[in-house]
Image 1 (cartoon, rainbow, N blue to C red):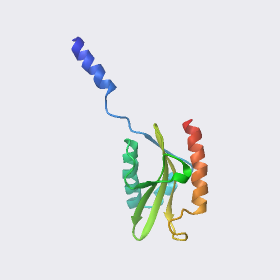
Image 2 (tube, rainbow, N blue to C red):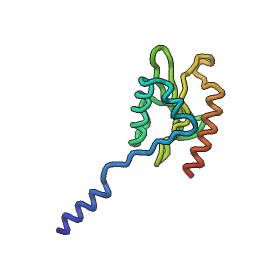
Image 3 (cartoon, one colour):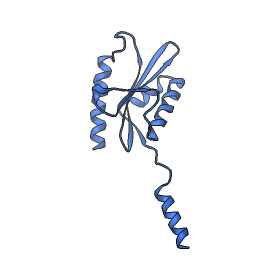
Image 4 (cartoon, rainbow, N blue to C red):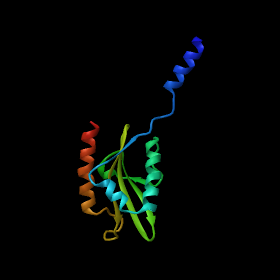
Length: 128
C-alpha cells in the first residue's frame, strides 16, 4: 500500500502543466473581438501555444519593449492584423490588437507603440 501512495503522490507532482492565465488589459478584449472570427481563431491558437509554454509560432519579438513581448501576426483577406502580448510565468497579457495600416511600411504606428507601452507598464505592475 505504501508503494501505491508513493506513486500517487509522485503523479500529483508531475501532473499535466497548468495553462497560463490570459488577462486582457484596457479594451484589448474588444479590440481583439472586433478583428473578426477568422483572426480571433488564429490569435486564439497562438495564445494557446503561449499558455503551454511555447513561443507562439505566428509571432515575432518586439525588442523595443524588452523581453517577453511579442507581436502575433495574421494576414487575412488582403489585410494584416496584429496583437501585442506580454508573456510571464503565470500569465499572458493581451496588450492591444489592431488592423495594420500600411502608412509606415513595417513600422508600428506611434499610437500603437504608446498604447502598448502604457499597457505593458500596467502588466508589469500587476505581475510584480
